[in-house]
Length: 255
Ligand code: ADP
View 1 (cartoon, helix red, strand yellow):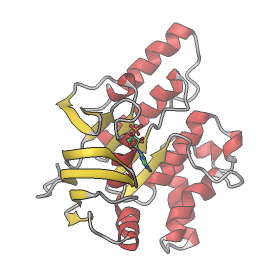
View 2 (spheres, protein in one colour):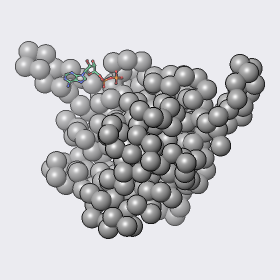
View 3 (tube, protein in one colour):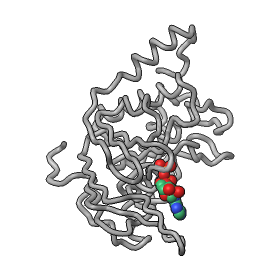
């Protein structure tokens, strides 16, 4: 907490029903969830438990059917799509499983884009994008295209793009889903470092292992929170080093 008098995320009796005419799918049922600034929370659950639905609502990409969602002190549950887009751009940095980088665009340009969209000068955007990529160990890869980078490096570019606008939180949806174990640990160590630097991280995952790197684990089943517990997180960097030694690999992506 940094002295804020409100939670960054506050959901109360939040439900989402998909209306398919004959059938109503209760994807989320009366979710109560509070996340404070500075937390690193994993939201875990099996396929179909409601994670994507919750992620879309947390990320202001969709609205709940009922209940309330306060984000950074503002009731966003009834906002229009335009208002949601504004809040989203100011508050949240997204990281996705498939990186979602523009393919024929360099790492630097990918990271600059959100700044240019929000009206920053190209000079300022370039500078900030470069610094952010450097801070994630990609200083020598800024002119590479996504296909010239490894999966882990692409995800670091995506994390840089999420960070460059200085959001209140990072919302990561299965960020290690496409990566091998060593590279997943790389990415988790990046998140742990960012969180140690004070950035709030909400991580959606179906993997028990990945959730074990968060300080708190919320478990969803059938659209309900069935568990919400603090966790002593594993150290991703230490695990990465240990595993690399076991498999005899040079840790080329850990900086
Ligand atoms: P998860 O991400 O954990 O796999 P989802 O949020 O995708 O879970 O899905 C939760 C439930 O809502 C599932 O039963 C799924 O079939 C249903 N669902 C998800 N999206 C839609 C949609 N757009 N329309 C109808 N049903 C949906």
